[in-house]
Image (cartoon, rainbow, N blue to C red; front, side, top):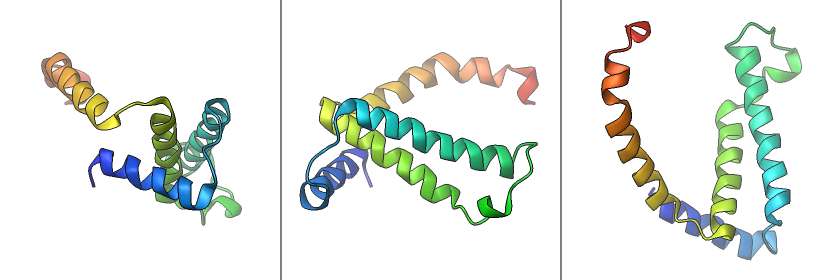
Length: 108
């Protein structure tokens, strides 16, 4: 699915199920909360912290999808075309970082 389509799907969901978008500050706080949930799973499952029994059933994919949903909400309500922004960012990173990463001895 293209990012533009994902933005449209989220917008339709908000209109049909969510009543309205939360304001931008609320969504920013919600994004921070969701990123924290992702961080908790990563830290415990792949990092050095031990994973609690209550955390073992948590689905990393579901938490990442929560982050994506809120990012799409923020893009919609602030008028950002994420497809365009992502394509531009990928082009910039490709030009800027290709040789840097290829020549990074730490990555070999």
